Image (cartoon, rainbow, N blue to C red; front, side):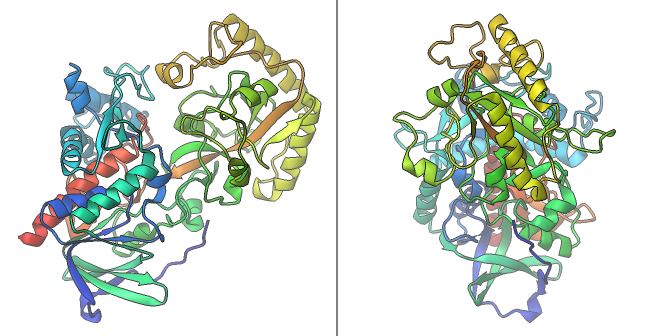
Amino acid sequence: MTETGWRTRVRPAADVDLDDSFDVIVVGAGAAGFPAAIGAARAGARVLLLEKADAPGGSFAKSLGGFWIPDNAGMRGGGVREDREATLRFLARCARPAGHDPRDPHLGLEPWEHELLGAYFDHAAAVVGELEETGAITPGYLPDSPDYQTRVPENRVGKGRTMVMLSADGRENLGGHGQTQRFVESCAALGVELRCGREVEAVVVEDGRVVGVLARTGEREERIGARGGVIFASGGFAHARDLCRAFLPGSVIGTAAAPGVEGNFVRIATELGLPLHGMQYPWLAPLPLELALADDPGISNVFVSPGDSMLYLNRYGRRVVNEKAPYHEVGLAMGRWDPLRLEYPDLLLFMLFDERVHRLWAPPGGWSDAQVASRWALDTMGNYAYDGPQLIRGETLEDLVAALAARLAALASQTGGLQLDPGFSVAARAQIERFNALARSGRDADLARGETPIEQVFFGERRPGNELPNPLMYPLSDRGPYFAVILSAGTLDTRGGPRTDAHGRVIGPAGDPLPGLYGAGNCVASMFGQGYPGGGATIGPAMVFGWRAGEHAARRASA
């Protein structure tokens, strides 16, 4: 994480001699930027796509590539007809649970949030169809894929909204990495010019309009005009230490976002005088603490905690959250504050499991040298445990606790001095006995593990030997060795910034669009507030509003 300082981010056009000019400039080649560039080029614009890193993809390239689309073509083809108002009530309930009011015209949301949710419902499926028509994506419909929140009564559909990106023949799930290459090919076919290694440091402004950018590559500055507009799709601020400390909860430690997301657009927006929204709401998921502290570029969030005989314990040796709950909700739960002890008691959780889990959730053929060398190992659905230096081992439970204590002592300067409570060992043993009894009964009476559709569909696969009623729970062995990984609440990325309208136009202080400036994805304020309705809720809106911004900017260039 970097300490990125403030600098001049807005330059008057009169002071800038342009080197080149395009109809539309897109900043950031990821989930929002590629659709923006493709949408603009398809509308006839000459498009430049600038990427800060040496290769395109950003955080999207590290993702599974799922995207959450309400009322999609697959649902309609399967006879599912989604009610617009019911879906908006569900999304409002997720976004602002404390303010949710079904009697309010805006459902307790800010008017702009309500407007964007409505636009998303109205246009998401059509944008996916446009991207498919261009050959940029092949969407895969997953009719049984549940949302993350299916128990709330407002969610009347509950499944089928998460889609995946397939190969052109429809046989392979490309994931973010494979789809990045396909996006690159689509951009090339449409004449989009892609330049990597370009950090956009400033915008060029003339008479209140954004008319270009200044991009740095090495020691050279490129000054490029944009007739129709500049679309920022540059990711959040997860790697900017100053912004994270200023805006994120104190319980958040680390990120798995791509290294380049350092809040450049937030800094530009601030200098433009644009109000910021949603800065306190990151996309959350646990991270292996030590990899998070090391800013490991290959780190992955723990989307699925592997194993049936596995549980999370806090520093007091207590199980405090359903280990199979959606990762964002686990991250939120880790932010609980204790007003008596003045601490986050769940700041770190210890994922404890036995030899059986370590063996049965290993990848086929065992741990490869490459997995160990990369210091983490987690497949696309999280179906095996960790290996590498962050894995802590003990021949007995007491040995494991001693090893955990020693590891925490070594990390104390980076965790506020957090250490195990003196009663941890006794409490942990009692908690394991309680967990084992619940596993044998088939019902988690404490934390409801295994009772929601998302858990049952994605985490419910049985491993050999577990014939108990709840496939997500199995008693831990009474003999070692035992293993643990220290987890923190980390981010996939942030999702705060200036707000936008249904066309991706950035909104100024007076409530009007700032001419020539657009935004999409994690660099602008999310309409989902604190919510995370389903798998791909990060990527879906990025794609949809990126495309719409591209189309609008292209039309503006030709006007």
